[in-house]
Length: 456
Image 1: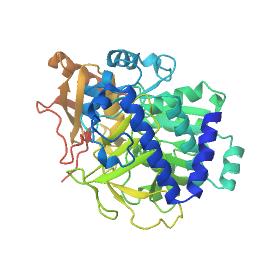
Image 2 (image 1 turned 45 degrees about the vertical axis):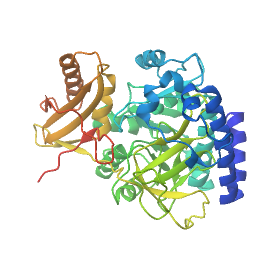
Image 3 (image 1 turned 180 degrees about the vertical axis):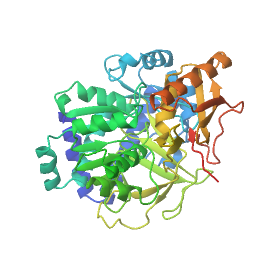
């Protein structure tokens, strides 16, 4: 762990030992510093915060914002004048640059676009150090000394199963790790590979720690149950979407492993991590999370929110202050039985839905939503997409082409990309059609990028 991250980890440990009040003090002090920095270095925030008090420790004084608004003012939002939206877009359009740093100092990540707008996010040195420190805190809570010994004796290999071909944070971080001193113990595997191929690769790698998306974790647990996958990780770390009740227990039983997960966003990758009681604990010394109603008024603990506002107190190049994530959360009103003093919550409506397809030989192929949706990230003419499974062998595609592009060309390119993924999965017979309707947002304002078919 780098020296800066180690120092921050020790600071985080001291803050946690001080209890909830010490965590709140650090949070409010860091909010005041971040707001002052944003007003000084970001023209966007300078204009929005005119007339506000000089020192702000109460977030309710600040107006909220959205991904769409931030992206629309990208060049004014960032605090480094050397950065422009055009340059960042050119950078992420080149897959060969995944894992490299923009201008030699910024890691670039894209969001999944669930609110209807794809975000471009930059991680500076401080963001990376805080992320590493919070990962250290997380692992310290998740692993016993016995677990650590088991991981070490099993070779310490980490298998990351992620989307490839786009500038997702997972791809960037994994690529960086694979060039580092631990490269021989890091395995990066693609959710786009056919499941039998992925199973074969994981069997050969034999990881001590497995880190897939949640839906992929369910698929791999089924393969382990069937005996086709034969790995024995000590820890399974699930990312992205959540699972239905019983999903986590099934994965834990299949692998005989500790299973943990996190709730995060590209805007704030170190947002929270789960405990043994199934609650998610917010890293509140570096994150400010506000459950609010539809008018952005605070929602009491114990009641589900309409949405949640997040403030990332680490990222200085791209300040994120009271950004609307669009998720409904419920904050625990009493202390968590696990004794962690960090605030505990549960997220409503982040459940993964797997997509079953009928093969010509009568068998079933099951795909994760990300296997399909992430493939469209490689289509430059598409601003927004929504994939609807209309039957056991059919998909419909709703598109919003990028401004100034040819809709016909965009539709053809998107359909061709989906067909290539289906061919790779031995599903070449699955029909892909264009739906003339644009992508539809949910009542909560989020875009469900893949909608599975539900047999009646």
